[in-house]
Length: 117
Image (cartoon, rainbow, N blue to C red; front, side, top):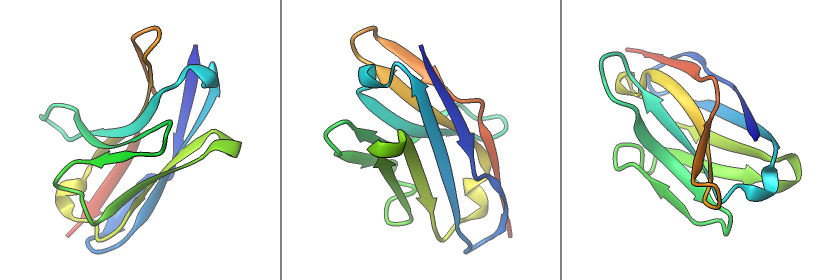
């Protein structure tokens, strides 16, 4: 099992910044990819950014150039630095860890990000 604990959400004005953190524990060695997803009211959960064990990253087109995903392997923590936030970034943000060996997704509890205009 893998446990994920998110922090760092909150309320910010448009143009502002927030940094989300996701601390992983448990079967850390089994994780291949970690990432952030978000779900706005009435919408499906969508990928925001992922980072693989080798360090490569992918971003949703809507956040490219504004968000940066990174990881601190010593702390088993993944970060999402969000700059130039827009009202449309408002959503619950979920941390995800994927275990390719077990073909299993693990999810955090979610953290609310609200961007006011």
